[in-house]
Image (tube, rainbow, N blue to C red; front, side, top):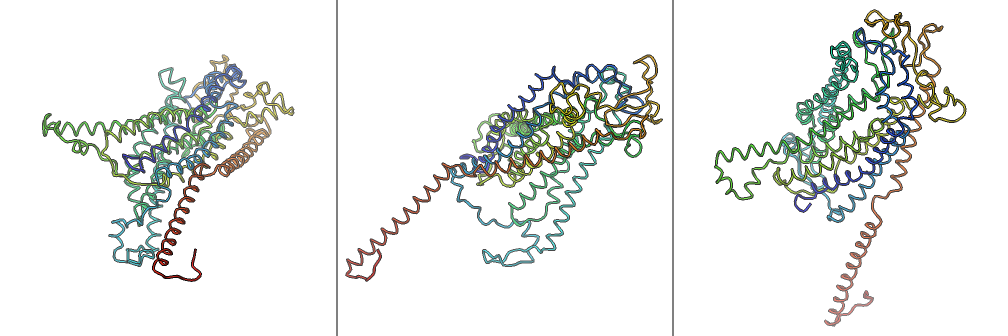
Length: 615
């Protein structure tokens, strides 16, 4: 703060506070993961999957995907249990509460910092009009109600038209991102069949995992490409003409964050809430453009795909950001020093004064602290929005931030020119964005637990259909037979011509297969309504909707209660401020009293007296 000013000092204060608050979240997330590790051998569901050598699953793609034993997905069932276990719901509630506590205690911390840095009563002076605004609207003026001077004026109709154009531009950019996600979906649909017919047995036997892994890497490359090519240029172009610099910064920040957030998380939302949800069933698959069969989830569920998406994107993005933050300025400064050596020679370069050496460093980027805040806010979203599917996200964020603080400090001190110091009372519009992410995280985690994970189907089976039905118990012994109850039966002869696999499944029993199984709650082929939804499907659907409503209302009530109970100012700071105000009033009273007494003495000395004098 003393060297760079309050604005940069406040960024490091916030980053340090955020990193410190990640310690309890990382510890609880690691505990949830270790709980899954310790209870892995006692998990009835994964046991049944690993022992299901007689259950043959239907192919997951057209033609080239073979029939497979359910036991072949044993390892994926075990990995799924590490992230989707009994502690997952607790951790989702904890992280929602953690986000609220983090923001509430940051308000208290910010108040202490503002008091110590003498920013409590500081208000930004009346900002000057942006030169772009003045040049654009200099012909039309009106009186400023505060200064009483004429200033450029933007008509309401012009402001509305620019707002519509701006909103349309941002909508277009988001549509570009959605189109990129659509391309990834087509890639996944096409590639899974290609990998299933691959000549290497390792890839052929793990075609779905290979498809997910390569799709995530391609998606990461598209994310970074869209960030570089379209985001800043188009956002500046589509930002309307605000009157002051702070208004322009807020508008630019909101649009850039919205684009970057959609760009980073759109594919994650697809995997979490759409992958495997609208595929139909064997014999009546839903198809994309009536050609490509939509991708199904792995026999062990969709959560493993979501975990891979989050883990790979988070690690790659944080690694890339750290390289660009430090590596790019290092390379630029090295190139500058090389040119100076060629121009002045080694002796001439060493004789430069310190200020000239500092001037030859890279200037701070044109958007100030925007990139630093954006990186951390997007990480905060990754840490909270889908944390129910990936409990290790806070731990990865903590490890990154410990490095991030030092990299930022090293970059500001050694690689960038010292920026002009400026004052600020808080982190600005970013606080409102953090609050919005906290609200969104409650909704998404409720849907992840209810829709993406198998928590609700297992609960319904334990209380309604399992061995303990009607007894009010839900332990591992109550999950016996769950895997068989969650799979439906399909008659192989009912396959469509374009879906019929090249293999007839004779390698399993020596004769062609008559039936295969698939994940769904549907009637058998010989029932009065073949492949219609069973009663268990509707029970699970009702339980999912009920869980979403109860979870959201409960967590929002807890969040609002915590916000109400935690005051914005610490008690000792409030007492210090009141004490300071009291002392100022006392000093003013004593000064006024001393002045009046002095005037009274002067009047008496001059022989003047007044009746009813005070005091």
